[in-house]
Image (cartoon, rainbow, N blue to C red; front, side, top):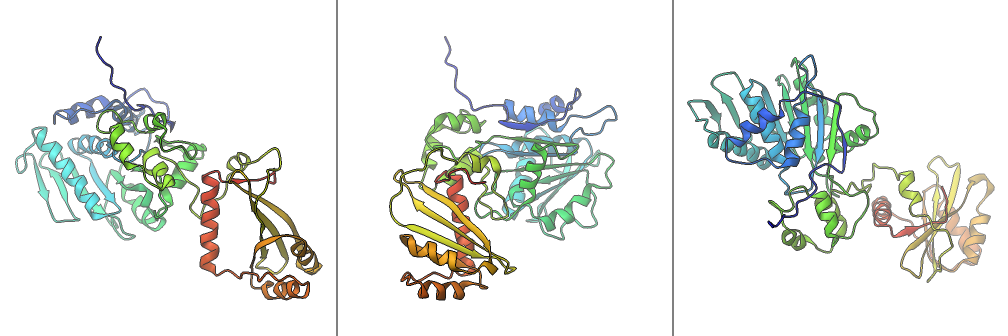
Length: 413
């Protein structure tokens, strides 16, 4: 009996695919496989979705985004789509965040064309200027340009197919410019491909597209992803297979195991497709907060950390506390929020009775007033007045602790 090699999951863990019954997917795959490369099942599935069309011969998905963990071959999907478009006379603009990425995309498409039997100068002509590469078919008018994205790139030029490579870095000002380059096409399509954004990613467009599509707030838009829903044990082999469709072919368990380091969040994002809420532009979702609720008050260890925030409008002041638990979580609770006109006595009384490790006061309108009130009440603990950079860092750390499920609460909304 022949051994059956285990493969990663070939269907997305989450997707929004509009209904269709016609596609050019099979034709595109045959063109690609003339190069002796073989498309994997998950790549074929995406190509069928990308090249689906309706009764008016318009693309079912005029926009389509997909996210796959690194080194799975997600760019091959784009290349299959580009080969089909190039040979069918489409004008294609392939954009990337970095010039090496767009240049690599050009080289990949060129190599596949050559291996499929198409010859430079006989079947197509090439521009090799770094960062401005181009392939143009001699017959049929097909053209593929490769560019690095800027807020001005693409102005005045018209294309049928727009590729947003490294989509996690796609920024609003770039979208404002680029989304119009396909407007004059009778049958435009824009494809976004990338990975979930990391801690240093600068783009927000890809994340918003994902959220809106999964929430049913878009039209003519498709989405597919391979991902975990929450922070997952980096040694969970089942999660590796669930989120890496090319595991067992171009990826191996050994390669993934060698990637494991101290940064579990980064591994979850880049290898398991985790969409973190760590970006400070994000809100905490209700479902995420509810999952951190505990039924019984945990046992505490150590002293309290108190945080006081005076509102920027000078109207209210809020007090919250945090304390470590015996099972190494951080319990948080908001004590009260009162109008500033009620005075600071309630704050001073609480702080005097509590065993305090630290007191942090944010909000210039009341910092010194409360510090003076604490001194008058005989509280010896010197409060901390955080800098703006420290507040931003603390917010990021709080969100990271949420993602890693290190915070718990007793049911506060």
